[in-house]
Image (tube, rainbow, N blue to C red; front, side, top):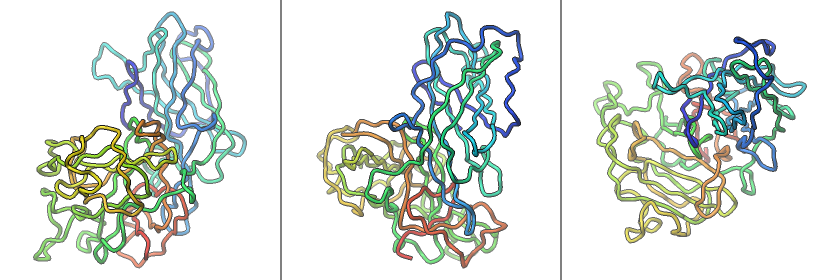
Length: 406
């Protein structure tokens, strides 16, 4: 997980499964609990915390769900307090408690990022249900149905009792007639044996549920799914040192829905090679007119559709309002941008109108089918596969994806 900055600082949690909740203070007890305000738990709609369904890892697995949220904790005390743990539980019938240790992420030994100064806020990232198919990963799997509510308890150093708060839960549906979007890539652009793969983006201002997509093929020599091309002489995979070594390099990208392009950039060069950050990104911000805004990032230099991002517009500024149709070509996947570690496509959806971006929300797909974790060599070989057909849910982390038509 990654640190989020808000006002003065914020915190990050590492989650591990725990037993029953204990409220025993580790240091001398003070007031129980401290005077704090818990607010702005996002993403919410009508006060209900929105969670994401997740596709099964592999055929026959159960559907799951996950929490990926931010909560703002404001200190109303007249002294600095330190948040040390968060306990996450659910209403009757839900999974047991999980403990989130709040970690100090500030490299300065004299400053602790868990400290909340008087009258100041701290933003904390919360994740649950992010395990991989092998059971490893950030924490654990959460299986449907989603409980009615979540119970969270904030534990502060020196205070015997935690601050307790609850929120109702609901699975999010995108604001489209189907409650989901078609995939931004097409099957016709994949070579034989190629599949898209899903990577889950780190926490970001509007990118909590974003994806970093790649394309992979089965490497029969090393017995794994690789994102690298086969050498032209057939002797093995390229080493990945060039952008052109990557299967996703140059794959076409399409608008998931109609709307208005409110911001775009076409003029930036690609990073000279993977792992080098010497460019800004090319991409699109599209307002779908339904309360959701999609962003597409890291497009290849010289491939951005000039009819949608003309050279006479002010790049990377809002307010362009250029119409775009569902399925219209946007550009090709590249490696542009200072946060691009190599060729890939970043896509996320956030709430917003007119280019004013709000919190990130789950991006769900229909018209695709998936097969399990691309890193799970023991169960996901070269195929043939039994696929899960997604009728409106996010792809699981590291799912292999085949867009419609199949």
